[in-house]
Image (cartoon, rainbow, N blue to C red):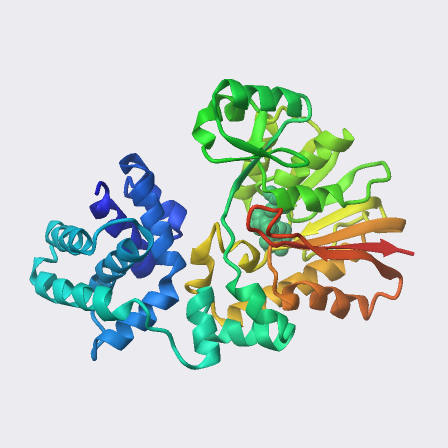
Length: 405
Ligand SMILES: C[S@@+](CC[C@H](N)C(=O)[O-])C[C@H]1O[C@@H](n2cnc3c(N)ncnc32)[C@H](O)[C@@H]1O
């Protein structure tokens, strides 16, 4: 199998250096090795908690991290790829030699052989631990879902949906033209209300670079489609890389003030708007926890797409749970509340504020809204919903439309 060395190096970066999968695969040339190597990296991380558990059951003393990476690759190749067990064991042993871990080949060989014969069905008997390994989330997070969702937690946590890439046309290019372009290129697609799920974005890279189409998740579009617009400029308080700002600017031909706290991310908004040939987006460097002078009650439509844990898009980004602690989550929730309190002040009477996250954990969603609205009796919740991960390509986002009286 091609690309095992590159996959090992990328996984080592993820586990030992805390890199994101996206950066690690790029840095180590995984994509040049083909789709299988990339799928392996992703799939190992998607089964992190399961493989950690099984390794802990199969050996008395925890192996060094680099050895664990090789073991997890072998376990994943055996479970998720259609390969004979002997081929998996010898491929991983060969990889160990190539990456300078020849000294542990015997151990890896023996452990993977044990894994394929007696390790593949090992699961914890404790309910919370079992959910942790099956849902690929740490125990503290499983406890949090159980505390917040009760009986619904198990279903939410164990549902594994296939992740699909969603593309939409620019408003100028249009859906019919994109459908035709996909058909002419023999790109398989599944049509949605606002675009297409497709398997291979490489086949339309020219349309992407010409701004005729763009990758935008189905759930993000749903959030935008539910944002009430009543004229005037839209204030987007956490806007980078600009997906929703550009969509709203295109849809309503509106000016969008697109704020972000990081300079390099504000540049992403400008680049994205330029690529999509939208000239009404105003990239703005601003810390949205602070009130903007002179803008109180100035907008009919405000969007706060808050920084969040990303737990609602674990299918695409399984790495977001790897290093996240419970106190990180508490910090995120605090920031969300600060941002939402300040955001309320920009809304004109009768106007609306949309609060959104890409998390399906109530602490970041309805609990943030209800906590802030306790002190804002001038707002009502007009609508709140989670996007349906089955319709949304595996993602579950939250949004609430808050109407100012
Ligand atoms: C979920 S992302 C926004 C995605 C964006 N709305 C889109 O659709 O492309 C959250 C953004 O909030 C930004 N952010 C975090 N803290 C912020 C703050 N205090 N003020 C403004 N932006 C902030 C982050 O840099 C990040 O770009």
